[in-house]
Amino acid sequence: MRGLYNGLLLLADHETGSYWDHITGTCLHGPLEGHQLDIFPLLHMNAAEALSQWPDVHVAISTSLSLMQRMRIFFTGPLFRSKWAVFPPVVFKKTMGKEDTRLKRMEMGLGVWTDNTHRFYPLKKLRTMGGALINGLDDQRVLVYIDPVSHIPAAIYTRAAQFSRHDDELRLDSGEIFRGGRLYTAQGVAQPVAFPMQMLTRWYGFSATFKGCEIYQDN
Amino acid sequence: MIETNNETSRRNNQPQESTTGFDLTRAILRDKDLFAPFHVTSTYPLREARAGGAVRNSTPVLVMNHQAGILAFLTQQIVSHHLAWGEMEGRQWMVIF
Image (cartoon, rainbow over all chains, first blue to last red; front, side, top):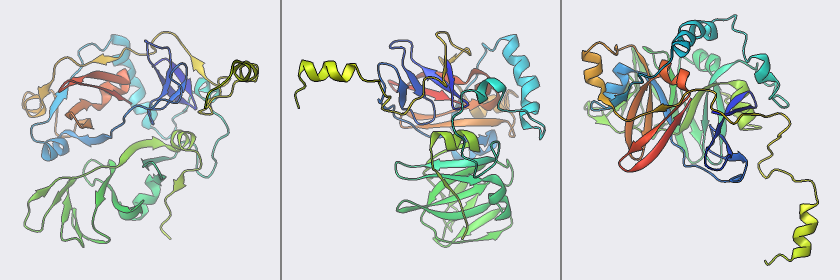
């Protein structure tokens, strides 16, 4: 990471000195400007959910965090989460262009995108809808939900158009059951899940990256 | 289309506009890394890390869903490193947060 732009960190490659958008994988500046990296989803969950979904998953654990970095985790984690958080810092603000003021700058949400659609699902909205919704995304549908245990939002592709709630599970009209971040057949057999590109983010970051993006509306 | 030298010269004398809309006047660019990246050279079964107490059920993780494979990271560590990179099944990957 060698820069700031739009209030977000900029990725740089050492070989060419080019600067890359770390969300879209597009080279923004330098000799490789306009080039595109392949991108893939990075999913938020807790360890139990990860093991439920991928029992043999491995974890990479860093042993090289400096004392300063450890202190940063200790002190800044609660600060960023607090309702009094002052963010982005002034230095970040200087890098921001004309802001999209349809939502508050620091509003949290799940940003979901494809080549054709860029959509922001505000967490507040998701909560008012009981923490789950099914929505069209291009020619497919996505189930967007807040996990009742980890409270982390995520989106998966689904064949279903509607669902009903039963305790901590969603019964989909495709006959499947969604529980604990996993999809099961009516017989209880776990099904593979496909994820659209997504990120848990502040409004300012998503709207600056995907200018004119959609905001989810339920009507 | 073949471009003549005159055309090239004329275009090079025009203000250069970014094809990506990048506004250099707003950017802060450095020639050194702002954070120490995490070079992943070894991984452990998450199940064993949990059994050994290094990870709890409730520990937040980030899961990389890559064609070459699935790999988890401790969210708090990636928040600090911002970037992890490595190789899996002969394919290079990079995770940024």
